[in-house]
Length: 396
Image (tube, rainbow, N blue to C red; front, side, top):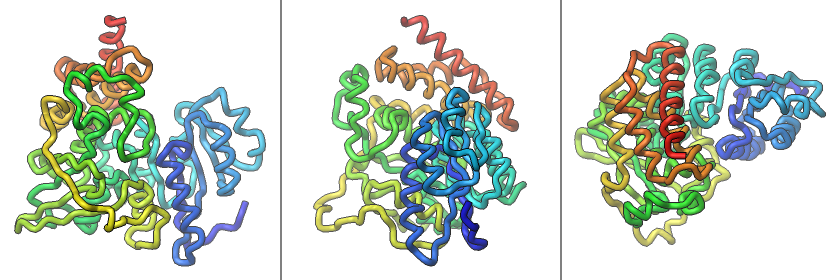
């Protein structure tokens, strides 16, 4: 092991082999060459990509790694005999509990990332949050924990990072916010008919016009369920009622979000569609440094387009407001139902349009409880998954 720099930010990357995790490590490589920025990667967690996780562990000389897939632990240990290796469903959780860190990048996709993120909060860490599901499913649990344990969240999603930057880190109530406007690319079906989108193939749905993301997030973008999740996330992140959160389609993906203040001034954050910019801001906050992301080329911006979303076609957006108004475990139900439905679509079991229908059916059919503890949230998650799986089984 290398000798630690006592002034370094000690970083754990959860989901290091996914698209956000890989981009996070790109940013760390870049910052290594800057004397003012000391970020030491001390631990990594992944799902099942052993070869990549091994290579990352060796490159960054980490103290510990975790892998969710128990069957891969023997292979992972090969060549990593001098570091701690955690495995199993709770591997990332135990990694966080065992690692001395100051900063945790939470980039595990889905509800699987919730326990380890909560563990980081309980230890007073700063969480660079790329996992939407943490706040969508458990915002009512997370926010009191942040105050109780002195932890903080810095959003990594480009839209929420934009709002965070426009607010300069202040709470929305202090900034006299009239509303925030989340921008959306419109995905691959922005100009398609509702019927064409409903019956779209997996290949068509995975062809995002501006962003490069993992398959689950890309499908969420195609249905605009990603924006529904972001509406709920913004509600918890910035303490905003649903009527102060709206969405506008912006196909160029240059303006990442707006904040409109009570005096009618509007601030926006602009940048190319490159996740390394919000990732670096989260890692270095409140400081800024030259970034490894693309630069915005103003000479190519002949126009910036904005249009209201078609709520008939992108009905997922309505579900976000329904879940916020319902409160309690409604967010967990929405998220779990969507995860199962997206997986079924990627496995060619259902059509694209059925995803949002299944989520709506789950929200209408499952009763909600107060989301004040992890067990209740996970029970709601399981109930929603069972409900949607049963619905899908009836179709097969």
